[in-house]
Structure formats: structure tokens, C-alpha cells
Picture (tube, rainbow, N blue to C red):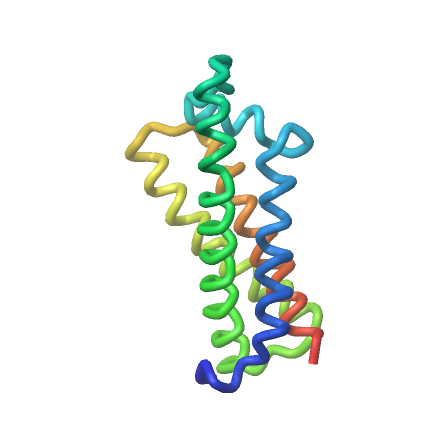
Length: 141
């Protein structure tokens, strides 16, 4: 499938869903605390540093949303080429795509000596996020 054939409304909605998974996944409600511990990140206590972090966060969120969009475009192209248009096929493709990302994280984390727990947190986000995006793209015709 070529880019001109994509339904960009579907892609945008799927990308926002992928992004939304991360907005819960990496918070205290989700896996935020063990993720921060795994990377050695702590919440700043200095008011000036807190202000700087708050100022930078919209930029990082915007970049993350853009990357979710790019990943979702690739997923939509793949779905179009394969001809996926059912719930179960969407689930399977999303899990497969997320697994590819998970394998990349596992290899990188192994060499940087990150914990298996951190690998599961990072990989799990993409497996869940891409699966949800894939479901949206596959069932919304």
C-alpha cells in the first residue's frame, strides 16, 4: 500500500491511541515508578529544575506523538499490503510488530545491562500500543 492510499483519519486516531497507552503506561498508575528506577531517574526536588522539566515536557510529548504517528503509518502500510481487515488479524499483526520492537529493546538492554523488568516495561508498551493501533486500523473500514 502506498502512502496516498492510507486513510489518514484512521492513522491519526490509531496513533493517538498508541500515544495514550504510553500516557498511562509510564505514570504511577502504570509502570512509571519501576521504569524510572530502572533508568535511574528521580523526580527533581529543586523548584528551578522542576520548572525546566515542565517546560521541556510538551516538546517530548510532541516528539513522542509524532513517532507514534510514523510507527502507525508503517503499520497501516503493512496492513494494506497483507490485506488485514479483521479483529484477530489486527491483534496478531500488532503483537508481531510490538514483538519486533521488544526484540530490539532486549538486545540493547542486554548490552547496556538493563534489567529484564525494564525490558518488559519498555517492550510491553509497544506491544500493547501497536496492538491497539493495529486493531483500530484493521476493524475501522
